[in-house]
Length: 147
Image 1 (cartoon, rainbow, N blue to C red):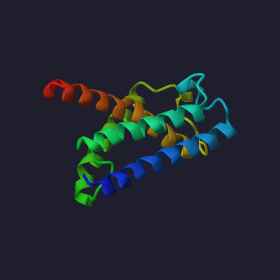
Image 2: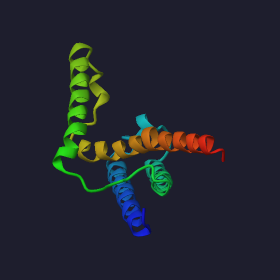
Image 3: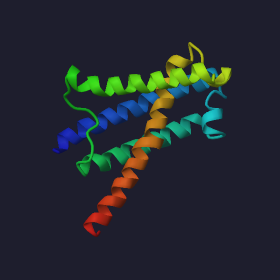
Image 4: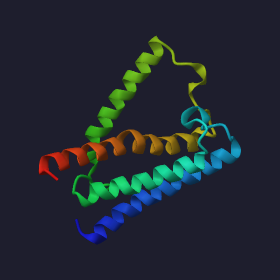
């Protein structure tokens, strides 16, 4: 991947990181304990800033190694399969909730939810998906190449 392409990809990650940090800042100002049940006693702005830096570092490594593309050209047809799989997964969750209801206080209600869910989704994607993927690929690539 060319350097200009990498910069564009990293700018997308930086933009998402800053957006998530801004959402967390607004939410923290409105309700200082909103994130507490998810990230414990860590200040949300510190958590989001660190995860943003982690995202940039991990995704840079994945980009340079040719493992991953943050954004690219895609058609509606390219997006249909992942959207269909996500819809099926959501349906399973809904069916489970109808059978064995989740706790009433599990959700964040509007209007906070409009900022909370995109912000926490960013945090979760990086910590539970991007970081493990990066670590796994780093281990596999060093093992397979004998480095």
